[in-house]
Amino acid sequence: MASGDFIYHYFIEPIETGSGYNLVNTTAYASFLLLSLYLIFKLSKKLGLSWDLRAALAFLPFIALTSFSRVLTDAGIYERGFWTVTPGIELLILLPSIFLVFSLYYFSKENYWKYALVVGTVGCVVQLLRLRPVNFNALFLVISYFLLSSLPLLFLSSKLKVGGLDLSVLLVHFFDASATSVALRYFNYFEQHVFPRFIISFTFPEVMFPLKLIVVGAILYFLRGEDEQTRFLKLVVFALGLGPGLRDTLRLVCGV
Image 1 (cartoon, helix red, strand yellow):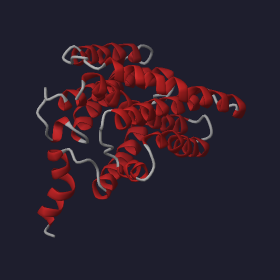
Image 2 (cartoon, rainbow, N blue to C red):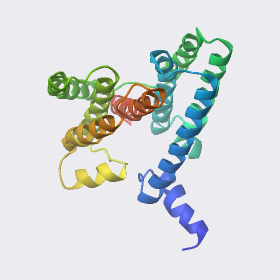
Image 3 (cartoon, one colour):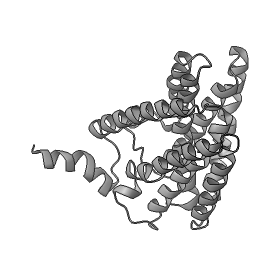
Image 4 (cartoon, rainbow, N blue to C red):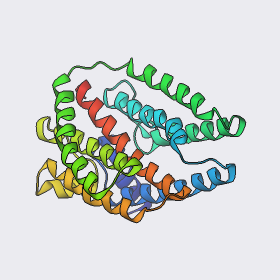
């Protein structure tokens, strides 16, 4: 296979057709993500930015903004192309937002997160106003799945004394699992990620809950501690659950 055919088959064609991820582009995107996270953390350390609740609030709306913008592509409001789907849309929104938050922190260390929160929230509202909700039954199902799955999770967490950021990470991934399960179970959606798609192909959509518990739980087990790097990585895992969960839920509600 020629290099041009290789790039087209594994990277460009999935974007054009919406056929989902494959092992090749998944590996490439994951490698790029890891390198980006390394550079982001090094820069934040140089600036002296602490990965606490204020940092989480500063970045939270931009994660949501990326998800909302992605749904606008699914709805046909934005033309489908590299810059309107993953990974292009993350480069287009998240990289400038990181530069913005770091710049705000450099000039206003006490209030940087407030300014970032306002800017990101305005962006989210602008994008949401362009969407039209049509399927509130799907929203009810996602909320129901999330509440029913959260009860045993909260019980188990109380027994194992898991709380704070760790519990928040688990809950947000159960939210993502709820949206995925509802989309696949009731609305004939397609799981785009390689590993979950493989597991679901011979089980059932709700397998995402134990899968999330095992995988995310194992990650949190190894990310024990309260140092800056550990908190940073936990917030990254949080974002990796929140972004897809918001996008899938909004897609269902908008019927796209």
